[in-house]
Length: 97
Image 1 (cartoon, rainbow, N blue to C red):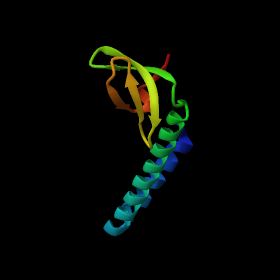
Image 2 (image 1 turned 180 degrees about the vertical axis):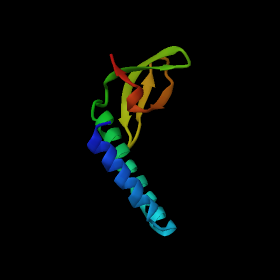
Image 3 (image 1 turned 120 degrees about the vertical axis):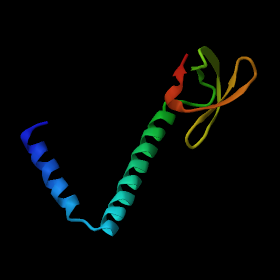
Image 4 (image 1 turned 90 degrees about the vertical axis):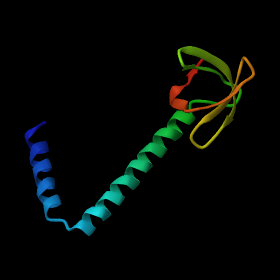
């Protein structure tokens, strides 16, 4: 860490020490909401890499599953595997073939 970063962290710690329990709970809710927003943006970026009918693959329990994207959901991709099974998979786990 650089000196200015350490100073900022120290100042933030002093700020936290002055907060009441209610203030800390509010701050916690704000941090959780911000993290949810970051996750949502990340998920949308991952989903944007795929289209219906893309050929994709992922690993499950040591074996590679290959299939076609049939639907883009809010947080996952639905695909029909070559063996006929349907999977809902996080786009972060998929690779285009």
